Length: 356
Image 1 (tube, helix red, strand yellow):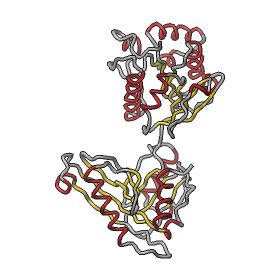
Image 2 (spheres, one colour):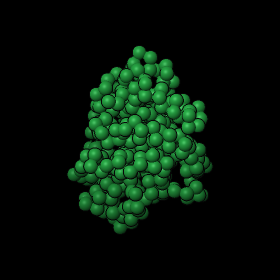
Image 3 (cartoon, helix red, strand yellow):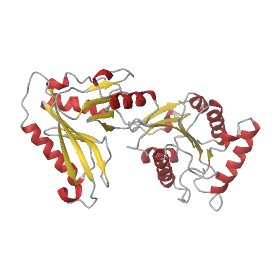
Image 4 (cartoon, rainbow, N blue to C red):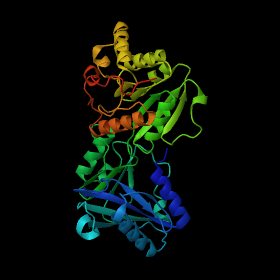
């Protein structure tokens, strides 16, 4: 699967003859977006964002100035410009941070070296000075001989999984993953709360596998980050989830909820497991999980109720927003179990975010 921004780049260059990719390569202090945020600018359209506001407008105009001076050539030029933006003095923004942007004009000649089918697991590596083409690292030995030692080490660690797949500026070279990594979520139940969860998670960095027993229970249109999984036995879907997936269980049946919960814990490593539940339901589930031999460390990770502690409300939209906020905090903190044990959290709010 090709990353969306790369598809947009090909479409814009093909339609207009050229485009400029604008990327944040340094962000200090209070900046609207982080390193690696980017947009593709054409003469008539642009895709992506570097944070909006005065910075984005200024960058958009600068990119189009570059396009106005662009002359079609038969051989790739790989032009690049780096520009500094002190957000307070230069742009009159109150945030007062500092951003460095990389402008990269791309025409049909450069496009020949940019494969449409680049893997989303690859890294785009290039110097911030002009001349060298984009290179895509998928395997641990791709083009290393041409890169500075620090760049080679960083890419190796990212590809091997020993380092987070973050964009970085190292020794005058910029490294970025072709696609922002997303956390897989298995959501069980396509009822009212499940639908609200799907709406709340649109445009968030999660890939949702939405599991239910009946295809008729799903809405007709699904967001791009949602995959519909119809399963006669939802517990079977849980057994095929990748290690580290997050599981959110809210089906129409307590029996199905328990079977899924048990399957997740028996299957192996999971990053999160939560059941929409009352205090009574959680106590019953814990008792039954112990009876079937689930280890205590796994049972201790059961989140029930779900969502942020202290954000009360049984309405589907409130539950969904609470869950989304909780999950974003978990991503920010590396997916750690940040909630207190449910027996403590539930005191005084034991009916929060419960199933009907």
